[in-house]
Amino acid sequence: MTITIIFADSDEEVEVEVEEFTSLEDVFPHPKESPSEKTPTEKSPAEWSSFLDDEYNKPYFRELDYKVLKAYTTSTSYPPFELIFNAFEMTPLKDVKVVIIGQDPYINYNQAMGLCFSVPSESLTPPSLKNIFKELRSDIGVNINTDNNLERWAKQGVLLLNATLTVEASKSNSHVDFGWTTFTDNVVKFIDANCKNVVWMLWGAFAQKKCAFLTADPKKNLILKAGHPSPLSSSKFFGCKHFSQCNEYLRKCKKSEIKW
View 1 (cartoon, rainbow, N blue to C red):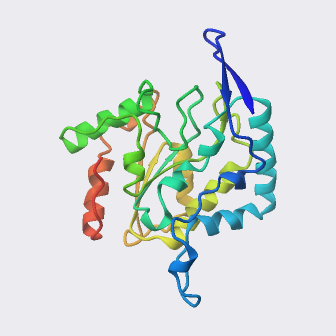
View 2: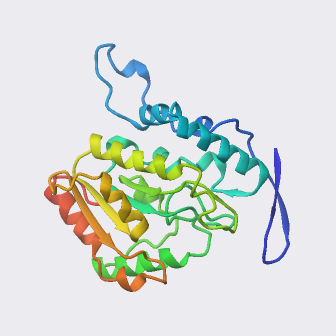
View 3: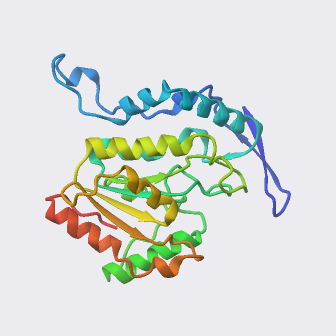
């Protein structure tokens, strides 16, 4: 299937070939292990596939599925359809050590990649990500990797989760009422029920609403709050020292630190 992307600032048109999907289920992440690796009586650990299968059968998700499919077939939406669940693909549940919650995907072409705050390496650095890198330098005090692609974090156990997983091009929060908030609320509950010693970095009021679903016990979670790294609220973000606090907590819990 071919879609046409029109850039608002130049009226330039670009035709892009995309795979045709019929459901969000088509792009659910799949377990990396084969069923044969477990004996028939061995209980499988909780994983994203079981969570997603359960969510898919709920009425709210069927409505969400319909709205997302309609949006992607009638307008330009981000991220690419096959990357909607990229955060779950990149960070298996058993590996989750840190959760960072964003708001919704970037709204411009070749930015959103299904990981909050992350953009492809070749893209310009968005303002919020610039401020994240500034805080990292100030907090850790050493040279850091400032590649805009944050897959390196995701592969170490940092779940980069947006509260809303899709968006229409050039229209922030355009899919916020689709049902994604219910979905990501349930993601937070699922992590809280199945993981321990998780660091939650909640930047801004939108992310901090998820606190209602977390166990407020330092033996279970480390919950860190600060302003959003956007230039509009960065004064409440700078100086939070979340990255060093995160690694200190992981060390105490006998877990490997994140190489930011």
